[in-house]
Image (tube, rainbow, N blue to C red):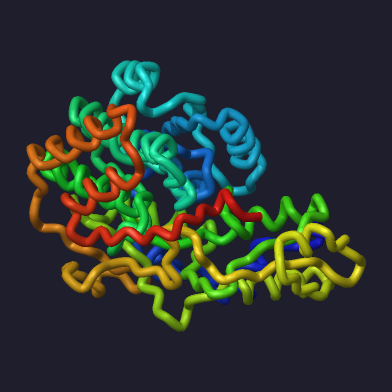
Length: 401
């Protein structure tokens, strides 16, 4: 059944409800300058095998860079990325194209970076992005290591040979964070601000990328292929970008931002879409009707037929879930005139490195305690981040279908 679903067309029709990219006007108007900054240049993409990283690569390849290195811990993902790039018409994959299955916090990565000649553009998409990553102190430590400590280590390394443009993706959940994932990315933003005078650093906050790897919607494809029931929150709305739009946004932010800028899509409340409405449209697109189930057990017991597919709709009750996402707080200074589809949070003040080091040392000291608990870390983060208002329900996404 899934084989008959044209994902990109479905996204345009039922999710973003746009026939052309939300950033098409900005992208086309900036095309000459994009070419000037990218053509013949050397690019390093970290976390490039993921949905957003690969979309960024495709956007950049339109402008003929001379060299492209891609680093990701997902070896299979890198293999599929290469197959995809080599098979996509009109993409100018440079002769100097290499992929490296390695951790960007590893010694091997440091050696790679220092041995190779200078990169002009570096973009980092390696991140723990799921709210479910805060299930306990061990999962949280892994998330903080990737989103925070390795970012600091990367910036120290880049300071030795600074690129002309450096971009590191953030998340809408960094605005008034209510979960530790959002707080970790807000802390990452602050670390970047501490380096903003050393070289140009930009970031971007945006919400869901439709059918991105590991997302609820991407999971639907696997569930349906295996005749497994679907489970969907009935009360959550989200802003969505297509995969192409995510790559364009990040490329525009990389090239045109001032150091310290945080970019976001200028979407409005009329463009919020509920997961329930997407699920209903998807089942209808497949020529089926929804069999509404009242529990996970009922959904799993129901055998999908040629006319009905089981779906369990439930009220959201897991830790750290916002019913509606936001991109900035009322205290942020916003420039909404530079681009048609993009707003910019302007950060004119540099964060003191001493404060960052102090916070990181306290977090590390707490994590090194063998009896540390999640609540201890929540309290520590709240102490240093005035806008962190953690919402704890005692429920994790790992506890449900």
